[in-house]
Image (cartoon, rainbow, N blue to C red; front, side, top):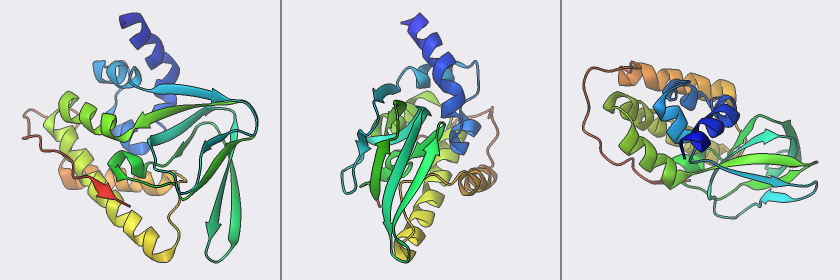
Length: 198
């Protein structure tokens, strides 16, 4: 089990930390990193296979860690649009923070591998495995993410696509508003993150 944990961390950590909030909260060579990475599920599929479909309930967030994928979605002004992405690429982050139905379809363009991070497992992991300061940071980020998602719903731009620059700004703002430091000297009371529906 310990060897598996070390191998998973070695294989997945760099890709996992592409999501800005995880870059802030999961430090390399830490027990948290090993425990977190060992919970990820890796999948693979040949060309032309669907990773997820529009309208389906999301199991969690997805991180393509090898290969290329195409994301198809309908945009109210542009009609059907296609976005091709190479690894590393995150999709459906909203599923980490609440209930999420996919807004498009993700298909492999060749052999691809991806990691699945289930939303409930993600929340439970951080609720039980982190300091109060980190949990407070995640709570602030979750609330900011909900506001951004609601804006996206209103203007029709909400998709499964990741927006690294916006997510990075949100993570930094959440860290500032939470007064977060990587190693707080005290623990906050841990209350459950509120489940959201997007």
